[in-house]
Length: 196
Image 1 (cartoon, rainbow, N blue to C red):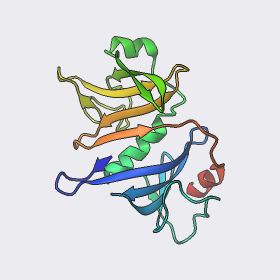
Image 2: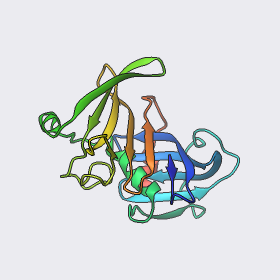
Image 3: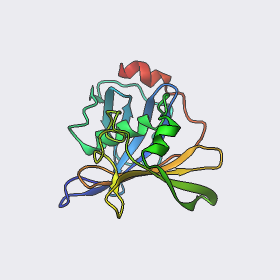
Image 4: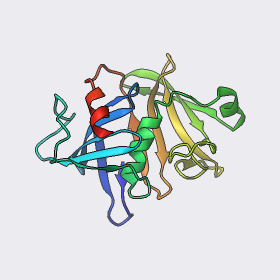
């Protein structure tokens, strides 16, 4: 996901785990291929630790959030990355949008595609104006424009109904793709307590 101003954009990749039952995530952040930070976050808090020499998923076991970590509140007005972190957690919302209203608001099947050899159905869904997040908030806050000018978020859905990919564009023009691979990950409950 290239983020930043058009003249200074960098390709940022997050690799890690999201525990949607506790709404906590733990990931490495790389910029243009170089590992920069360990991140742990929930809906309200973000902890960051600078790293080097780490590639792929973050180290396990999950480290303690000691004084080497910078901690603060999530503030989506401060950075595009923080907007994306909130979006990632909201993909696991326990109160999904009403399917009937989603259809009435213009959601539509776009095409079929494949992810890792598995067939996917791709849907274009207008943002939900009743939600306050950067992903599902007011139209245009975080979506892409179709040829007819409609703002949409693209979802890749597998046969079992699970989201495997989401693509959207931030208001700044930064394109974001989130790939989701269902897997048994580490226990992040300790991170939830440490972030609070």
